[in-house]
Length: 259
Image 1 (cartoon, rainbow, N blue to C red):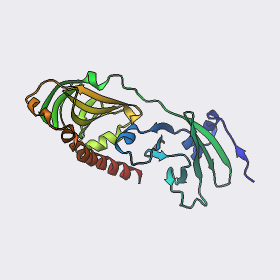
Image 2 (cartoon, rainbow, N blue to C red; image 1 turned 60 degrees about the vertical axis):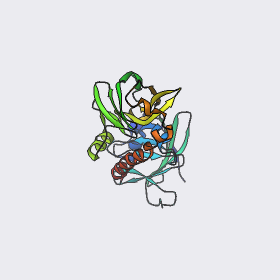
Image 3 (cartoon, rainbow, N blue to C red; image 1 turned 30 degrees about the vertical axis):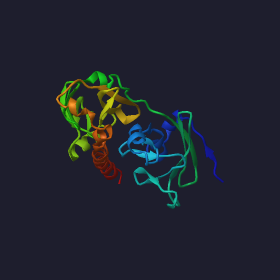
Image 4 (cartoon, helix red, strand yellow; image 1 turned 90 degrees about the vertical axis):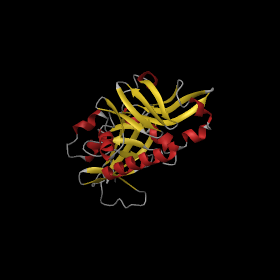
């Protein structure tokens, strides 16, 4: 027979340091990635758990986790769970994530996580943007805060260690991944004509991407003004390919970190 042990959240801290469930009970639950909802709609929406000394775990309701030597990892529903310390996401509602688990002796654990809070967007991107100049129909020069950047449609700019920069290579994505908990992100989606005015479009995400603001910033006249009559689809189309390339870089980086 399995005797349930239902500790309160605070009493879990009295468990031995080597207890895997103590590690799991101290996870930070960051909720859903708003970036995924907008740019990776085909991907299942997952909740993100941050545990000490291991990559983020993506879980959903009914997800199964197993303790592997010194860390928790996700299992598919078809993988065997015999002779393993396992946990399961029992429920997800009312801003609470409930987890149950069993150790090797069959002892039962049940506890809840409250969603962690991260920094909100204190300054909207509209207040950070300035000196925007169209260099082509798909490229702009602009200031974000104090930094002067050149961005193409589909580019990402991140605020890493207090400085905004465009992510271009593997090193940039390494830095962004490592600082995701504190880095804001801006994605330049394109230029579109709205109410007969050229408008810069994008999305601004707070650290950990739990909050997102849609950006629509009217642009002033430029030497490309006469070409602004080109269909909006033609002006924003490059976003798809360039965004896909950046998504591929970040996904490969994330996959490598979680294996």
